[in-house]
Length: 225
Length: 225
DNA sequence: GAAGTAATGTCGCTAAGCCGACAGTAATTA
DNA sequence: TAATTACTGTCGGCTTAGCGACATTACTTC
Image (tube, rainbow over all chains, first blue to last red; front, top):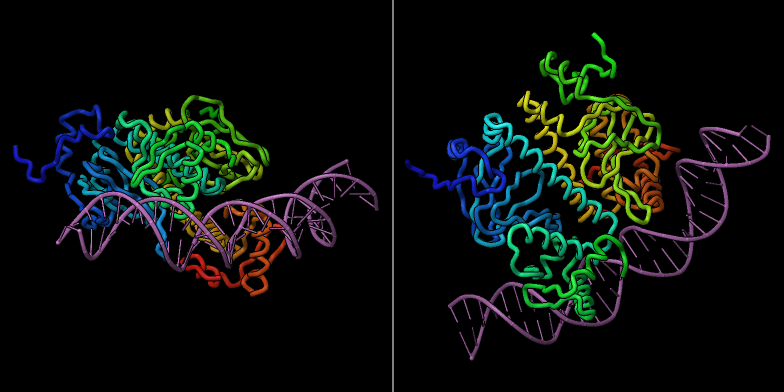
């Protein structure tokens, strides 16, 4: 059987996990595959409707940017994750990345064929909404140090789902951490150095090792200096 | 035919608009009706799963509150609108309010009976997500005056959909405006008085009349003092 | 290994805006 | 009509954190 578009088994995505292999096979025709270079913005042939994409490999940054060049990163997607484009947020490949994508109109066909997919999409959107709302609360109430601690928390959460390895290492630069916590490189640096002096973490080029993460989780819920 | 729970025709909600009357009639059994007094928090008999509610009359504030008593209002729902509870956001009646509600499990049954409902829910969640994401961008990039202008903008948008009457009057107190724009009463007051001096608006007790809204919409997209 | 680039460390200035405090005024209720 | 409560107006102090500027250090590439 030919597979000109080189679409892999959809069952590899948690989103489709456990669904009928026959259905999954038949849905392949809706999908397209595309790869992006590091730092390249994810753009898809415009179809009028929104696009949904699944990350096959690599990492994708979902971020807003302001008129004056600032950037706020909402989340970073890894292999296996889904994202549905909406709003003005921008998707950019952090490293070489491959994705499968389809437009919302086609996804609707899939939903019609399988109510279970509809349910899962609703659940997925609900989850994203939850996270997004929490982010709003963070920005509204918490000061930078607390938000940074929560960035660490979220990052580890996401990692624990996929890989159990590498205990408490966060592979993000200060610049990236600033973008994720809605602050600036300098301020983040100051906070990190402060925490390093307290023995809470170790700073390295390109990554941070958390030695006493518990000390930070206090800040995640409460609010102390 | 008895209607002990006193559930009105579901067709009155835009969400269900145009769906088969027979189906709508049959879904009534899933719904419950409840009314809340002014300032009362919306709580529903716990069913384990999330709750979806439809506002019959009144107004409902969806807000986050912080440990130290601050509050951030995400949105204010009016009659006809739907909301699906998630996260830690709190729903509170601003005035005497009546709602229909059901839990997510039951809503899933409805979705299974009608793919169209599933599609609409997905669209609804997508729209909310869009708005929520834009809110994040606001909080991350814009300063208070600009966010306040956007609160006006959003409020008028929402009003134009429902009622065309009352040109540019915003019925919110400074306190409420502060909560909606993630700031404090004092700061909001200062900005409003400044705009009043420029003849952009008129301040009244309990409401604001926009005289030259165009002057504010500039701030909505750009960023000037 | 020289040049270039990316990441980090540090300082001081400045501004936005939070916060407490208090006063005045309008609406509501007793 | 007195009392209470809700809303608005205003001020000064204080803190957080943004921003420019510059130095240093590590990786990368040719």
